[in-house]
Image (cartoon, rainbow, N blue to C red; front, side, top):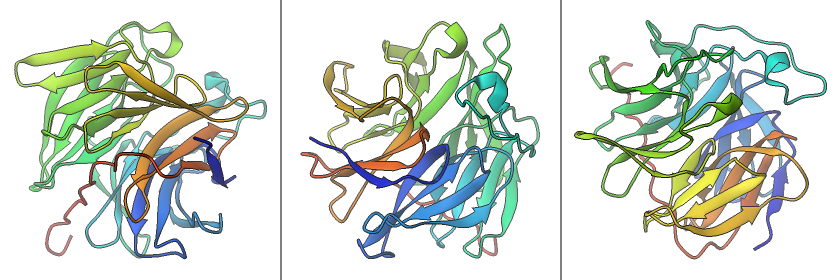
Length: 295
């Protein structure tokens, strides 16, 4: 299955989400740019990439809102020189780390910011709860300080996990179980996929990565660890590796298209968006965040 280069922009792309309805392909991909601190809309039919909101700092994950806006995890800005991914590192944009709300007109506000470290990725429950990972900021400490939070409809935060080294991507399985990727960055231990259960966490596969998504049968599509996406069965067995040409760093992925059988992936290096069309199983449906009345 050969990938298609959808767009060479944006730079340091992350957090892709399929938005049906607009664009010449029946929908568009909205993704973040960690280096530009912005949201972009990519038309997969034409490759045109246009900015839709400036959120500052380091825009990381994104989820759709029911009114046409978005929720964004803001990591506060990265020290790109320290990370070492770029020959010519972009400048760092600082912003308060937190959970941001991007209105349909591009206005940016914060839903939560107090006590948060460097929010990374997020997923929305059917009831409107936003679950997001909160790893420590760079430079990484020599302690397991990563956390996972739930942001509820009433505006309260609940910490559902802590003591993680670097919780990165997050998604829900078909039964609603939360799964996070604990990334082995900078040689940190315990890289793998972790199920978060009420009776304790379950690390069920040693698969490092960044962001990920699932199909309707519960398979995991894990971006990162290599230039491309690794497909895993629910029990952690590797099914397939969807490779991208050349060298690079893949950050995240999502399903889209009219039948949710196109897998889109974002690259930090060299940047931009890729797609694999005609996957055998449709992607798991994504829930939109319902803004509170007047919110």
